[in-house]
Image (spheres, one colour):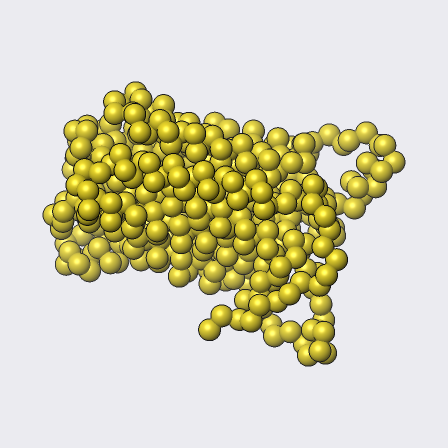
Length: 456
């Protein structure tokens, strides 16, 4: 993989400067994508250090029930849906995706302060809601910047690189929580303070080093140059055609995607390991995600993003079965973590790339936000409902019920997305017109991108 140190997406070239044809399969990733990945890495250290101890903090330290945790986890998963489309739409309309994303990152950082003082259910709900609203505001504009900084034929790879860096942070965060709890039993306040520090560093890097970029069609630029009235926002691109199928499939599958915390609580109940080891489960999942994010992103670019997204849900189905069936405890734990990591690598960035593929440059942010909103809302309902199901029928039975429903849902989603599963990726793209990148508040870089040597 090559990394470009230009902020512009490099156009396809028939050959390299020395006349040798570039090896097939290589992709260029811009410095903007890498810098956003670093911002996300720091933010994930902040958020995942908290998420890794939240199940135990709520059910063990604070003594709340699994129903209470289910509601809190539902808010954690789904409250961002309230503002995702608004964030994407705002970034599309004002042409400032970086600063819309900055607002979301800053709000999440401020919410970290509340964790230092919140101990009751209502206070925790308010803090978690503020944090996740910040996530909802920032995600689609950030992904729109990634889209604008990447070549259309390497979107999956760019999102894979970003998600890889993101998940380095998602692995470090639980490790940080683990070492703090190892040194300071019940050191939840220390974890919350460290979380705040990393969030502030991430916001600072975003504000100082990430340029504001957006993609637009040349005809849109020409219209603005001639003072032609701005065209009406094309909502139909987001709400009809192939995107409608994607939203329906994502919603169906999201309803059967319970929070990782429930899977980890089920594993802990089986293995009966000490509370301070609990964050390491998150580390294992994120290591698997880290290893698979780029390969599955490339696979999605080659064989189709819809196909990888749908069949990637077989990973979480396997995790449910491993957590519920009578498998050796160590094997069940390792299998769960690997399958969860594979699931997120096959669906998280791939869904964003699929939404960008099916929308026009002017609607990338809104399209990505719409897909993420559907997923967030469905996961909110899933987490809250699963907490009640667990309370009434027990952990193994509830896992098997959801797994059985998912066995039916995966073929149904594949049927919904059948036109996208069978069509070549280039034919499924909503806007085949050439796009370029408008850089705002940053000086253009005229030098050719410097390409790093491939990692060994």
